[in-house]
Image (cartoon, rainbow, N blue to C red):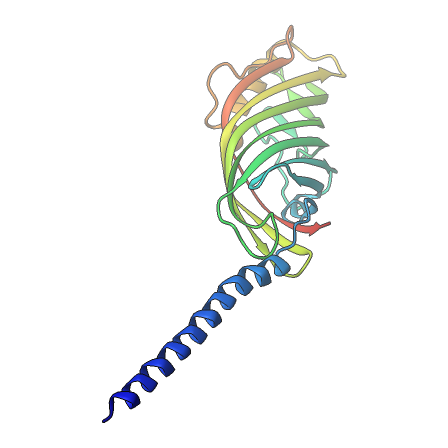
Length: 255
């Protein structure tokens, strides 16, 4: 093998390597450029809660990116009297009421931080954040009451209550098309501050409130309340604090 032949081979390899280097450099620059074309930088999204429909509620959400990974949002919901989730009425020996339904609205401001950067658009992937939820509802408590003298009374109350919850959340937003996404709020643990008020529409004996409190103590939804949960003829208000948990599924549209 001649010396000149070896030189020609080396030169050919260098030329080929230069071509490979140029190709890799081109690919290295072209891939981010393509990602930039795929990535959509829309900063706004409006959503509709699918999970709230089960309880006869309608909720819309607005979310806006305010930083590279941070967004702020606001949810506004309304619940009517209807819904698949209903609370059974009180059914004691002395006090019986109808099923408990309620209606009202809720406001939910929140902030989110998106953990992973995606190539679909600015607001998808895993996130965590914080929220405040304020709910205000009204209800009726109607039924019959029999006192210790076996006298019968008509029970007719208007109930107003509000709940303020503060907590954290974690979720995942899945992009399903260029503009649509599904947001899975996996868990939103927090603490809720409850305030209830009963407005009596009929005259009732004083012992009614003792029997009402005893009936509520046996009511499944109030099993874990402490002794501060009491109504009286002089004060138809009560307050207490409980743990809370948010979750849900929302269909979103970005613009």
